[in-house]
Amino acid sequence: MKFTNVKVAEIIFQERLAKRDYCVVFLVVIRGKTCVMKVHRGQGPKQPWDSQIRETNLFICESTAYRRLTHAGVCARGITPQFYGTIENIDPTRCLPHLKSFVKDEYPPTAILLEYIPNMKELKWTNYDESRMQNFVDGLNEIHDALVYHDDVPARTILCDRFKDFSLLRVSNLLWPARTLRIFHVRELNP
Image (cartoon, rainbow, N blue to C red; front, side, top):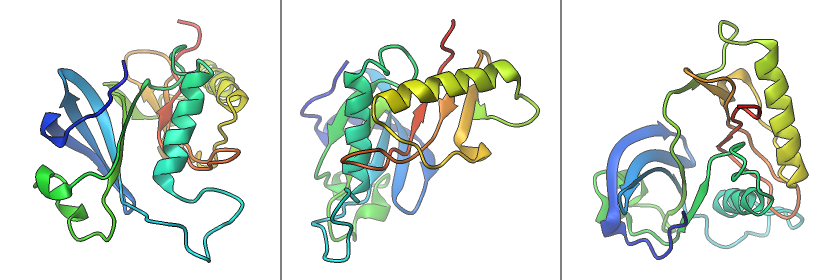
């Protein structure tokens, strides 16, 4: 499923899942489909001090990563969540109170739409085992084969499904040309 030409009036906010300095993640319903909407702060044009050899806009980096993962079949194999598309130039005043923190920003926010996977929790030493780690490594190799590079794998960023074997990984950083991928998951490769 791919969403195109999503209007803000079609977004039904269910719950805020996470908030960071650079983004807010929501559980939403769009056209009858429950999904995750990750809203990034608008970044505007590159500045002279920004890197000239890599992309620094988080929205561009992450959406490029998901397009690569989709093109390489990584999403279709269930290793990462399905990528449903993007929404650009959102008017946050039309999504109040949910996007209140974006109203005074200089540039309009953008969003990435992803498959929602319920029952996820942090991977901890109490639910860790060798088969989960092997699935993690295998999934990461497939992600790397799609030219998506991670650079953020502390324990708090690795999530698993409470009821299934291995699963979600929040990682960052792409190879070329974009660099940052902030959220995706690794599901059980051998169901």
